[in-house]
Image 1 (spheres, rainbow, N blue to C red):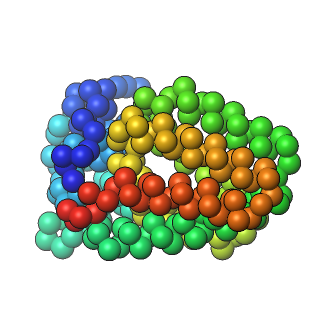
Image 2: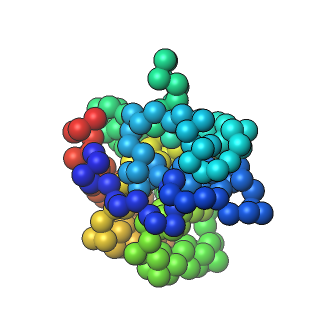
Length: 230
């Protein structure tokens, strides 16, 4: 997996001391999250509270709080005597989770398309424009990608659907970021989102299903090499 991960960001990750007076807990959380997303901390890497605190020049309390937050998001997991490690997912588990996500995202997009007004589509269009502007920034594009899908889900009007999708997205968050590692894939993601919006505007459920399926399956394929190494 490591050979496919993007290079660690100079301004993020575990390099360098923390800035004050920003919340130390938030800074540590962001540093660790970036280190995981950029491949600086690969799946299976032990996460040792005392070592992180020493490297960042922080006390152990905000580090502990940041680690708990990352664990709640599914990026870290307890691993017996090894303590906490960066979460690892088996190839078949990753593939299954993307297939389930395809089905749920399709339902969400179809339901939302029947409930959205023109102003709601205009909001998605504005998000697409922001994605185009940040297509060279994987971290920001991932954030906007998440926001795009969250806006659709907000209009799908289903509490159980919302919970299932939010839990699933959290579980594959790292893999979604890995999928944005290459410039080509980032441009494709923006185009696929635009195709989803066009299909939703048409109120054609079959077209919505095709556009959504293409997007999720292409994302799944883009992390395939990583899954094979799992």
